[in-house]
Amino acid sequence: MVVIAELAASAVPAFDAYERRVLPLLARHDGRLERRLRTADARTELHVVSFPDREGYLAYLADPDRQTLRPLLAGVEVTQRVLEVDDVPD
Image 1 (cartoon, helix red, strand yellow):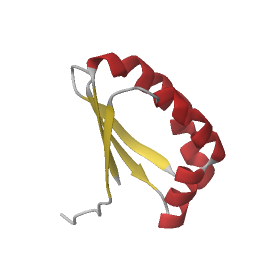
Image 2 (image 1 turned 60 degrees about the vertical axis):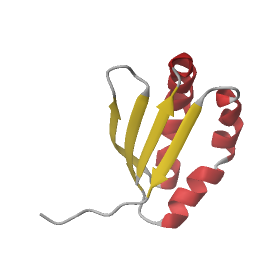
Image 3 (image 1 turned 90 degrees about the horizontal axis):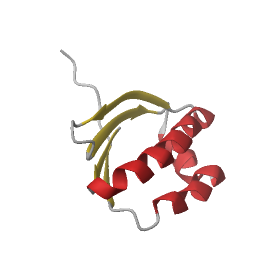
């Protein structure tokens, strides 16, 4: 899947703090951050994330530690989109 996060300039530090704490939780659910890309102005970030199955992704979303961290984004201007994608053969 691809996660696209668009941030207000003021949101970048809070988003970074949140990501530093939440991304390590992927491994609990057999998830993997394949790529993390950011625009030069740091206001758009893309994550290519993989899970072996949808259940792993749903378990990551429901992870109690992840839920505990959500308040770090309270009041932060972040728009996120999640796209479920497949590899395209060459």
